[in-house]
Length: 203
Image 1 (cartoon, helix red, strand yellow):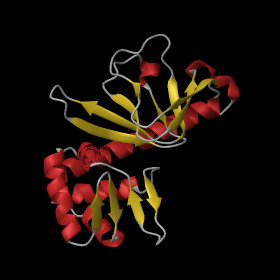
Image 2 (cartoon, helix red, strand yellow):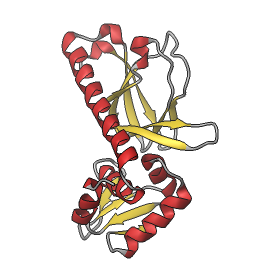
Image 3 (spheres, one colour):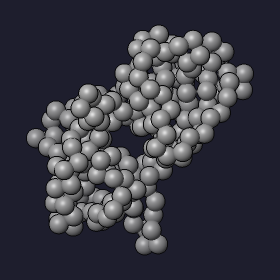
Image 4 (cartoon, helix red, strand yellow):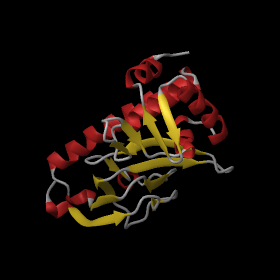
């Protein structure tokens, strides 16, 4: 990406809202994650949240600045995050192609999430979400090489289209099965292979 298209680089702490729903204004831009993680989330009138996708380093969000369409989501920093604010009219052809490819991949991920939502049981969806969290800054390795994910039951519920109370019950089942170990604000993955099998099952 050329420096000419980057207007500014912004930093957000985990939990800060980057974008709110609404119509984009003349100062709205496209955003590229430089480091950290951004959660794209829809919230209904009752306060129930659904994570639409995660935006990782090198990926983009705020694409409605191109179309002028209404933004129907919140963009939240899921970890300490730095983003580049990009002026779309200053992007060169290679940048524009990269943006199109990244957004096409994001659309494919959204299709996969919708497919899981309609075809999988909650236990399978939670297994898939935990494996997806592995590829984010929310995951760390302990001294024994095990994966620890810093995530709350509310955040898991948002990722799988459920509510915290139900997720807590299913997380307990996974823990009793020996697949995970759950603590306050964190989940340790004990059997990644078994979680992968669950994540691939339908029905």
